Amino acid sequence: MESPYYRTFVGLPLKVEEPFLEARKDLLRALEEERISWTLPDKYHVTLRFLGDIERNAVKGIGQALHNGIAVPKQTRLFMKGLGSFGPRKKPRVLWVGFEDNSFFEPLKMEVDRVLELCGIPGEAKPFRAHLTMGRVRSLRNLERYYETVEKNSERFRCSVNFDRLVFFRSILGSRGPEYLVLEELPFPG
Image (cartoon, rainbow, N blue to C red):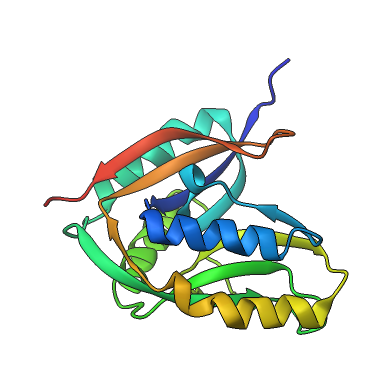
């Protein structure tokens, strides 16, 4: 029997170019002895809001509210700015790539939060930091080597990416990683 809930989030999908993918391959090789769950490039996105489990019968209404309530921006090209980690220094949890300028993300995040509050989904207390998750750190054998590798490779992850749509996703967890299904898509004008 299918669950009465969908695991959902609102995000901005993105595609990276070949130099970024080459840098990713080298990073995976350099950290192959570490337990890191790597994000597949076809799943790359910036999460504006993770909603978690939402009742299936509410999903369509949320998608419609996002569609009708968000003032979408124009397509925008932004520069990424190297690698970083979230979590305590001795136990990092997420390896990520940030952005040079967050001014594109913040108004869009506020719009999403406003619409979700109108749908009865309360806002988040934690601060927002736009990033692309490269991988989730499960455990590290050599913490020092991890940080040396991140620092050594950071500059290789400076590139530009295009944002051309906002998507309300369903995330289905599986043994091969998550599968993302589009529930609602808001294209940005060119």
